[in-house]
Each structure stands twice: as structure tokens, then as C-alpha cells.
Image 1 (tube, rainbow, N blue to C red):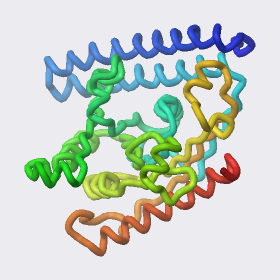
Image 2 (cartoon, one colour; image 1 turned 180 degrees about the vertical axis):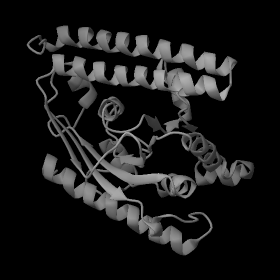
Image 3 (spheres, rainbow, N blue to C red; image 1 turned 45 degrees about the vertical axis):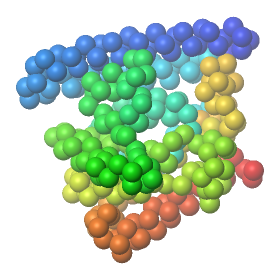
Length: 298
């Protein structure tokens, strides 16, 4: 609709529309979150949570509509397996851009239960997003380096404890728990710093995924291995989107079983830790090969 406009005109229009959309739905969600804070009763949460999830889905759907109105993009969604709104899923996507979150929310709207993202603690201060995520009961994680924990031993296991408490909340209603296993957005610089053995991905962090499976393994119906890619916009996808230069959007989901051999004590069982890392690395290897097919050789 508006993709014919030059980038310097389209950018402020698109950016403003996205901010208005985010701000409107976030304010509604935050207001209901404050009601839950003041009235911490189970029946209040049971009434308000579906309404808040509807607001979140509305944000994602409208955001994608804005993107489609300002870009001549092609959208390639594919699912290998069956999905349901009445099951529990652990979703493991790769991470390239802020757009990933919008796409996953929009994808979930008509296919799977409301998504709950594991977010970095610093994002609580991000306007609209931080408080909106807090109101939606999304867990904020603070990751500590091994060196920092060695200097502050009282913090050992704190991030895992946060995961455990969050998982308890998710057991009450069908939920999609989303863990960006790489722990950060992919960039060529991070790829080089981390000395990644994968061509298109950062190394996966196994601890959080393993603990989530241990805490909710009996509830999870499936693991959703999600591959997100923007094959024509590998350098600066978010800037390209705002400027109307988005090409192809690929979201591919493999529905994997939750097998017994991937549920166990990751932190105290050495043999399980090794086997779980091998399993997760094999999933990442297949994802890396698939992305290489999409973007071509580097």
C-alpha cells in the first residue's frame, strides 16, 4: 500500500505507526496488570489474563499488518507437524531481530497458546515493552558469568530459581514457553567473538532449556524448533523493514516430541548434561544447514 514511498518518507511513518500500536496495547495491558497487583486473587487473574493475551495478540497482528502495508515482502510460513491452542509447548527459535518477537506473537494468535518469553532483566526498563511483559507474567532473567558467580557465590543458581518459579505459573493453563536459546540476537560480531562453530547461529545455551524441561517436561506436549530468517535482509533487518525494503520472511517450525532422554538433572548429572548438549547441538546443526540453504554460502 505505502511501499512505493521513498525510504526517508516511509521510515518516520512506519516507525510512528509501530510506536502507536505498541503504546496503545501496552498501556491497556499494564493497566490490567496493575489491577492484578492490587487484587492478587486467582479469580481476578483467571478473568483478566485471557483479555490481556487478546491485547497482546492484537498488537502482534496489527504490527504485522503495518509491515505488510509498508513492504513488498513475501511471507513463507511452514509447519512440520500438528499444532493446537490447548497444549503446552517449549519453543526454541533462533534470534535475529526485534521483529522475531512480533512474528512469534502474530503466529501464535490463531495457532498455539499465548507465548511467554524469557527476557533479559535489562528489558524491564524498555518503554512499554518492559512493564507490558511484567504484566503478562513473563520471566525476566539475569544471567551471570562464571567469573562473576565465582566472585559472588551467593548468586549461584539464582537464574535457575527464577526459571523454576516462572514455570510454576505456566502450569495452570496451556502456554507456549519461548526460550531464545542463543541468549542474544545474532550479529556477525557476536558470531566472531563467541567463536561459533555454526555458520548462521550463535552457540545454544543448554542450561535454561534443560531446566525448563525438567520443571515442566510432563506438561509439554511438544518442542517447537523454530527457524526465523530474512534471506534478503541479512545485515540490518529491522532498519530495512522500517524503510520498506523487507524481502522474504521465513518462519519454519518443526514439531518435535518431548522424549524421556532429554529430561533430567542437567546440573548434577554429568552424563545427562553431556547427552543433552549433544541433543541440542544436533538440533542446532540441522537449523544451521536449513538457514544455509535459504541464505546461500557466506
